[in-house]
Image 1 (tube, one colour):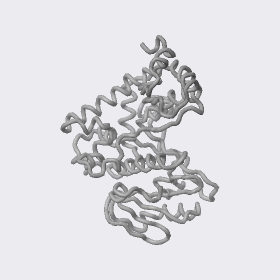
Image 2 (spheres, one colour):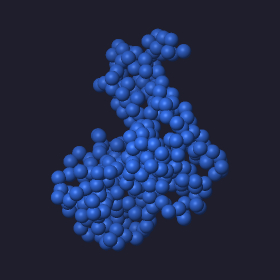
Image 3 (cartoon, one colour):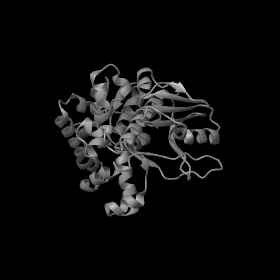
Image 4 (cartoon, helix red, strand yellow):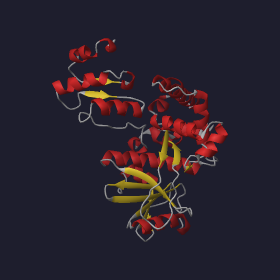
Length: 334
């Protein structure tokens, strides 16, 4: 067992080592610090973990200045260009084991088991004692507001727990990479801006399974189909932004009056506003929020990502780009 003599294990294995689920062995981080200081070198240790808060805390305390962070996402659609499974990605999500499974029943079974493993095994293994059935029910509830503003009071009443308990549950789900809370952008503008975050189930496969969908055909009539597309695009663009830039910041923009832009990427001093529309047709009402955001923030260029149609400019610095073109060529605005 590594835990019996961590320093000895590292000394006996001077080559490259991959440490999976490293947060389960906190004592390994001080030993890694000594091993790295004794024999510096890039890429010698790859540390993997499925829960970001505890792993980052341990790394920050023991390995500051000795480690870089990279979030490994499920398959991005842009990574699957030209592959057969690309067509399945929007419904089934990006987890590799889903696409290696044969048939819808096997894929749904893997998603069910993954959710159960995270809620019943991974989270308790971190010392977080929360009732798994209640966490799962919360995840299922979130599918109904996926892409919408988060109202903790409404959720707490439906779940039968306190406002603060729901907030704690969401912290855990976000730290386990199941959920994203997209924060609203605040700036010194005259308009009053929304302060509530928006909430997304990060992987579309998990989203659809938790919502009760079992076949791609069911997605066509699902009321939150547009929100599913929006979440998928956001996850892909955010992942690409983190690959191409140092510490990008992501927001959405919404005024109290309801004018909204789905995604703001803050890349250093540059702000990129992006509206996301499943439909391939866009009219002036669809981009009213984008125009207002650009005017309020002094941004000269805005983008509309659509589920179809063709690329076109519609004036005032706004460009419409079909999602398939972004996947094939990459987003020029990031």
